[in-house]
Image (cartoon, rainbow, N blue to C red; front, side):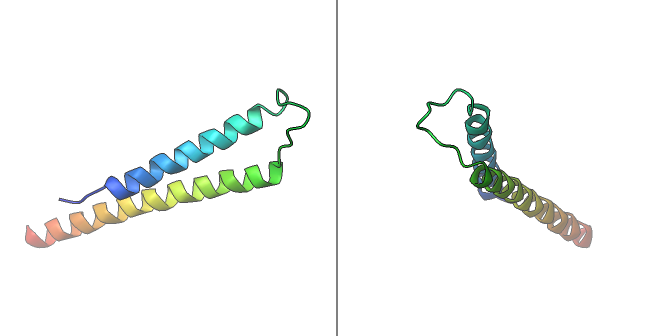
Length: 75
C-alpha cells in the first residue's frame, strides 16, 4: 500500500499558503496606513504555492502509475 500522507500534507500546506496570501491581498484596502503590503512578494508566494501543489499532485500521479505498472506485471 502506498502512503500518500507526505504529498497530501504538501498539498494542504500549499493550499493554506495560497489562502493566507490571497486573504492578505484581499485585505489591502482595509489595512492600517502604517501597514505596507508587498504585492511582488505576495505574487511570488502565490506562484510558489501553485508550483508546490502541482509537484505534490505529480508525486501522487507517479505513484499511481507505478502501482498500475506493478499490477499489470503481476497480472
